Image (cartoon, rainbow, N blue to C red):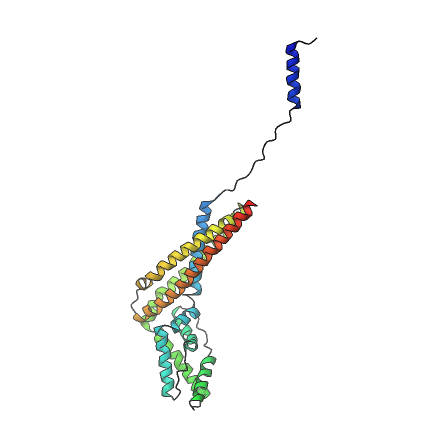
Length: 278
């Protein structure tokens, strides 16, 4: 017969066997924030946006010509051409800002050190012939060709003077530096995004990078917009009057792009948070 002590030990042994092993909770991997990566990507996005925006606005001859054609410099060229036409019997000021824009673009290409493209004179010829027919003057091919040559000579004399060329030497240097900085920031942004994919942090970095980068772009562009007249110091009054409206127009585009990046970044952050919860 078993003793009471032996029976109690056997009871504890069997009760331990009957107990089911406790289930350990599965380890959960928490989302890791990477603020350093976010800040670095935001800086790259800001630099890339600013340099890319300047490349397609301020440092683009066609865009710059459109701004100049509506400025006091462009009005001077347009009024001079219309005065010449009026002396030849063609009244009504047929030369408008859109017609003078290709001729201004040719002069700006020289200032930027770019290869000069041939001007399409179709719009100018059509405008002169139409206005001449209304005033009873016959505009021959030689007449319109002469006016076209005069327009090219006038824009060259206005924009490509010695003082303007000397003032634009610094603009050409800044234009080259802007191109190199744009390429470098683009390559670094691509490498950074590839790294973010490798550490499973692509959307987590893309959203804050776009938002903060857009904010930096907007702040820098807004400050430069108001400081542009004071920052543009030139020995030529014409160069100052030329660069100020062009710079402000390009910066206005950058401010709009910065706001758009902020909105896009917030949408990416919202989508990433929703996806991560699900």
